[in-house]
Length: 392
Image 1 (cartoon, rainbow, N blue to C red):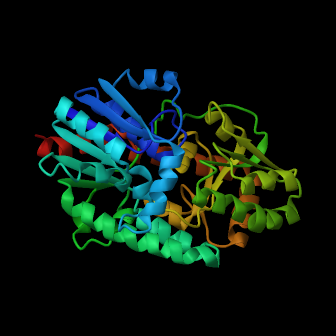
Image 2 (spheres, one colour):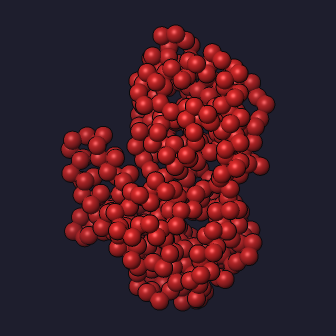
Image 3 (cartoon, helix red, strand yellow):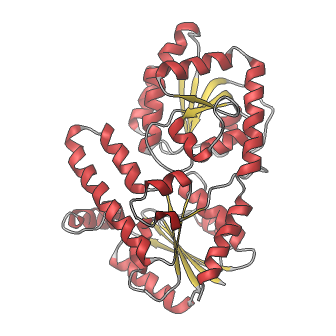
């Protein structure tokens, strides 16, 4: 099968969740099938990254969209029915390139990741196609609206409504639909949402494996630090949780590690000497290994938190929210600890910092859960079956 993959970003390096999912699924599908990759970019692309992707893609097309054109499109999107984040990625010049690729390469199937890319295949109704919703973007936007400044809420509410309508429309236009978790499937508003196949992320347990390294920090949080749910989490952690912890352990430290830290995140380190913001690191495993506990108090957002899977695979004790654990489905108290309030998070942190054997017990249980339940090979096999069922 020749598979055309449409992505809203170049899927390498692996510093963001959508890239991670696309990359690992493509690598495995490429073992038996030909991959034609087409992705969008609003900036320059490192030739080394493209060279890496060429190891398993027969053809790669990166469509560069200038920032000024994106801003212009967003301005005109006010008068359309498209969600703003779909309009952000959809441009006539890119459409012409993708139409040409479809004509020239004659793919048997097209895989679109996120509804951000689906507008490009609406003019090709006979082309067999699969949509990977990945996350329910409308639910994520709805949650962001609750915590947004008052002046932004009308815009975010309008975007939520547009996304709901668009997600439902795309459901009806695609042969197959998949999503990252059962939780996200339930957030879809389509009456036939049970027909969406759940294909979870995996974790590369050969890459993310236990490391023996002296812990420099007490706590670590990782992720794309320009992503609103991650920003919200670390602000909550530093402002609400750490002050309670430090009443008993004044020197408790936190490492915030990940690409593109926002100004708000950088300010946390400027104001608190016990908080370190690393920014991008070449090997994120070094950040995990440098701390005693991984914590992800996610309050908003959707999808499956890859950071939790990676931390567990490295045999780290993990503390998170019920929201984040809904997709992981770890048993609270057995392989993960769940916080609901700042006080509960603080109590979990203090107990683990004060009890080495409990840290080790929790870490071992999480490690076994991830190895048993989250497997990229299995996810790729399930996706392959869907694609072959409707391939041209």
